[in-house]
Image (cartoon, rainbow, N blue to C red; front, top):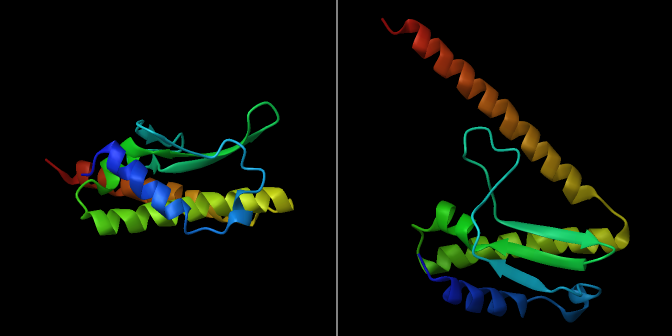
Length: 137
């Protein structure tokens, strides 16, 4: 895994790929935190939050990325593949930002659909495990 400093440099580089107008009203910028962030939706400790878009009247608008979560999920990947995952997450969070500015919620709705699929698959896994346990002598 790359260091947090290396990821920060990578994130800075990826941020320059985006048009300047994407940063409109993103007064808090992009923060890279060392944290490993387990999603509140995690059922089996297997769902990490890689990034979040924040908007509040007191703190403004900003994006946080979680180094520890990337390390937990992608620490085994070569740097270029990790960079691709980082790029994808950054763009996802910028989509939340742009939709927020436009009063849209399409990505929030899609995120909720993905969480519903995750919950459904986790429920199935638990049922399968319970059946396997019932079969054991």
